[in-house]
Image 1 (cartoon, rainbow, N blue to C red):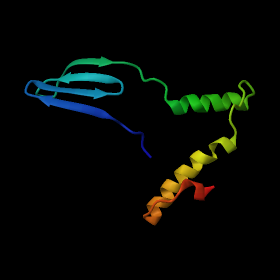
Image 2 (image 1 turned 90 degrees about the vertical axis):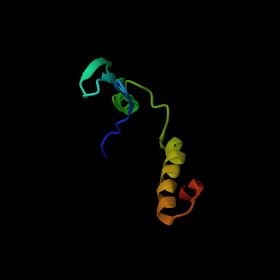
Image 3 (image 1 turned 180 degrees about the vertical axis):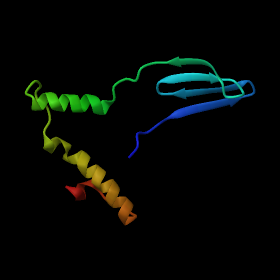
Image 4 (image 1 turned 60 degrees about the horizontal axis):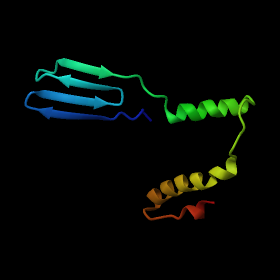
Length: 96
C-alpha cells in the first residue's frame, strides 16, 4: 500500500494555495510558485514504535506490554475485515 498523501488546495481569482503536511505554497494563476514555506517532516508514529521495539529487543528498554494486551486490537481489526466480507456486523469478541 502506498503512503497516504494529504493536501488541501484552495483556488481563488488571484491564484491558489496548496497545503501539505510539510509545506504551504502560494501559486499564481499560471501555476508558478510565488511563495513557499516548508518544514521538515516529524517522525511518524510507526517509526517511533519500531525504534522502541528495537530497543526492547536490544535490552535497552523494558517491554511494558505483551501480546495479550494487543489481542483486543487484533480482534477488532479481524472483525472489520470479517464484517466487510460477510456484509454484516461481526462482534470483535467472536474473534477471540
